[in-house]
Amino acid sequence: MNSKTDFLKNYTLSGSELSILAYPHATLSKVASEITDYSDQLVQLAKDMTYTMYQAPGIGLAAPQIGKSIRMFIIDVGFDREEITCADGTEDFVLSNLNPMVFINPTFRDGEGEIIYEEGCLSLPGIYEDVTRFNKITVDYTDLDGAQQSIEAEGTMAVCLQHENDHLNGKVFIDRISLIKRNIIKKKLTKKKKK
Ligand code: NI
Image (cartoon, rainbow, N blue to C red; front, top):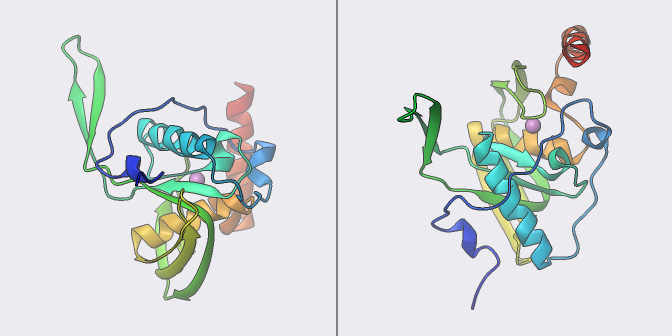
C-alpha cells in the first residue's frame, strides 16, 4: 500500500520553493493549531516545505515560518552540502545524503541533561546565539499517514527538534537568550528593515 510518507525515502529534491517569513512577523509569535486533517494538501505542503528547507539551506523548517499556523515541522540534521563553481563562474551548492523527517503534533517528554549550542534560524538570517536546551529528549508525534510515532534524540538533533517545536508555540530562539542581548538583536533587525 502507498504511504503518504513514501516521498521521504530515497528523497529527491522536488517541490515549490515557499517564501520564509522574517522575524518579527506576527505569524511567528502565534501558537499554531493541532492538525486533524491528514489530507493530500498536507502532504504537498510537507513536500514544498522540505524543498524550501533544502534550498535555504537549513536543518529545520516549521510551518509557521512559511505562514501556516499549524503544528508541523521538517528536520534533517545530517545532510552534506558541497559548494561548487558553475561553468559560468557563479557559485552553487550540491546537497547529498538527504534524510528529511516530518513531525506533526509533536509532544516532548523525558528531557535530560543540558547542551549549549550556537543556533540560527531561517527567519532571523545572520543572527547566531548560544542557547541552552535539553541534550536528550523523546518526541511523540504523528506522521503524514496520521500514525503515532516516537523518537529519542540527542545532541544536534535534540536541539533542532526543540528549536522547531518552539516555532509551533510562537517562540523563536532569541526568546531564550537574555533580555539585553535580545534587545540589541531587535534593534539591529529594525535598522536592517529601514535600509
Ligand atoms: Ni527557526
